[in-house]
Image (cartoon, rainbow, N blue to C red; front, top):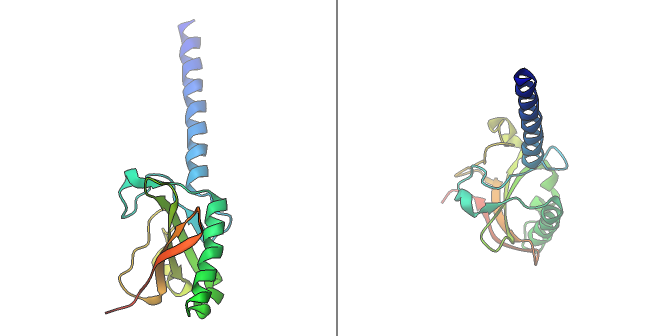
Length: 151
């Protein structure tokens, strides 16, 4: 009888582990294509983990549209037209749960960041090949747009 109980507990543990593993995988890779990744809450970035949250795909898509409009309006139309050649990383941050950090890097650098889906890409230079922006997901306003240009 105790052997059956032990087997039952073991199977329950395996089923629980399998369920949790699927949930973690689902939350880690929620992008709708190979050029985008939405990082989960408490992901390893330069932000304090306690201040991060995982935005929805819907909010990210609205921010992408806002980013394209912002670039077009602010003399960066050439970048706006080439956004499909960039990879994007997203993470929500702040207590208000409205700000989404957008991190982008161009195709010429893809080989330099093979783990971009699990590690935040950080660059100190690179011109328009690297940029970040903050999107208010409630108002779709873009702020803090910065390109990595050498001083």
